[in-house]
Length: 443
Image (tube, rainbow, N blue to C red; front, side, top):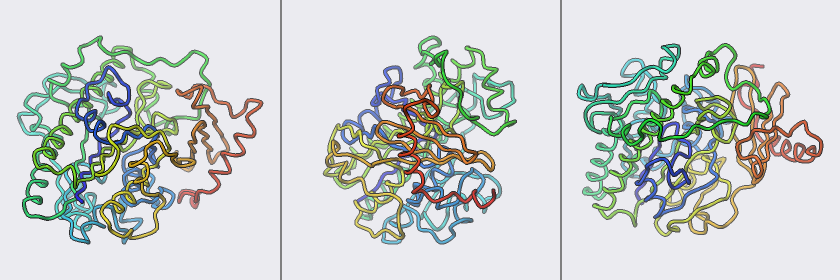
């Protein structure tokens, strides 16, 4: 069994197959038509590095100890076996292009450590834009206060941008290893729609100014704990956005989604051409969700549904086609699923379980609950999502409770309201099953 593992950075459910009629994502939609779309899939931390360290090891962030974008996985767990590594050790060719593990800067040696070379991969590469892929239109939406908060329409074609080159090299690896008769694990890590929001101009042209609508919170929304570290500047910058800036942000995000979707289409075309669908497990996932003006937030790193819930589409040989699974699943389930389909033993105890039963019978129930962690300095929150409820408990004592059935945008906190004590008690009991995060030792 081959594995094509596609990860899109900072992707919320801005996809046609998830019911968004404004976005143009024909390729991910056609993947969903030949596989299973998971309606309720949750990451274990809503930020890039902790999330990826979690799903690449099958361990919760409370177990990995990675809760920020500065800590490499191997500094916490030097001997852990990752998803591609487990297959590589048993004869698969493992190749990763772009952002599968979180990417750090520094020297070439330091970048290789962030890529987890040579432990996880036979080959891993990241790319820079070509000179032809220069920005020809755009601006910073915060006047430079948040340097990454920039959008830009670029010249050149798809392969003048890193994501186009990721697709190009992933296809070459699939072709070469298939021709050699060797099973492969290919990771295609697309940076879009992550900031800075740079995509070829053709994808911006798909969304003319005025073609998108902006979400607005209700006037009677209840307050919530801070969405970022105090004094960090994020909320201050977002509060200063004009509606024009909000719409520019939204348009640039949508352009990035369509650019990424086009690269996914190239990978799917290669599977068609090489006739590999019957022996390839294809996983498409976002690494964390994202807010688009909910609580005037334009980022991730919260314990709300928009940040914790992510797209997950899986096409498995022998699995259901064009189906929707509404049961709860977690991203710690991905590694056990890959191991199950490839017939390799799990290298260590996993926090997740294989998804094969749901891929074959999507109407079956999922998990009782899904869990997500986030930190704010020495304060941290652990959140539990069940079929109907989300409860978030913070280490400073704050508790939030939302009724996902009647309040899917989580605008009314019920934790302190009469009549909900039973729900709070039952859901906090589920959180009590979790290990304490490593940050607890520093408190």
